[in-house]
Image (cartoon, rainbow, N blue to C red; front, side, top):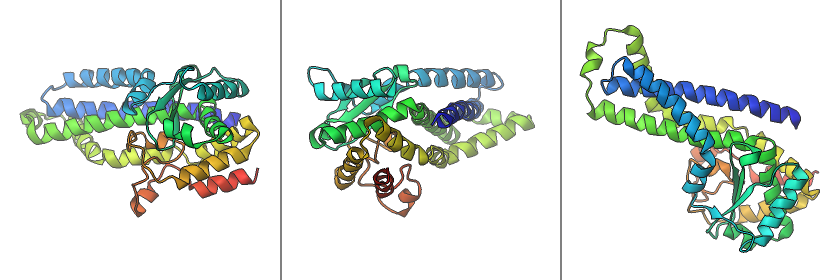
Length: 295
């Protein structure tokens, strides 16, 4: 487990470095297409560093806003707050902030750039449909993501994918409708190469985003299941919760493709087909349940 935590730290650094390079390239291409010239390189660098910095440290608020989540007070949700605080003590980390999504579809996720600035968010449907042992199982899974620093990778992924998608859209709109006179006058082979690569990357960014999601290994979910079972000392609680989550066919309205991989199970119940299965970010629930039953 400690090796996995160290590996996640390295992956976080590599992920940020990769996206900085990708964002820089896309911003440069956007600057060239908009006719900003060489000074666009400086602008691209500022955009890459600034957006990445703000996105990393504001990622939890961004994710919560996208999900339409609200704070869960002790007065309104004492059961949830008590479970989170108790499992945080067992995990040896600061108690995450509690949030809820007003939706009858049961699900949960964790977010935040560090254990000290983390959040566990559940739907009201989860609180209504799970008993105490099952709720503890779900919360322990999310608590393990935080402790193992998995949540850092997941949060970086959802924010960075959004940035890449936004820049890619700007590039294609500028390429189609913006000024391109400077491109023809630019005699720099290096600039032309970067511009071509930038446009190609803009076209391929949706596929790159999917590959990045797959890079967040499915083994992380198995690790969070195992770590959660260690916290509660009751694997059957999480296994029972997963069965209920699998049986519930209601899609979560607040979820989208950018945030789906954050949840304990895929919230887009209406997404079907072989292509979507190939690009799934979660292991099959039956395999997760089987692993828990062997503990």
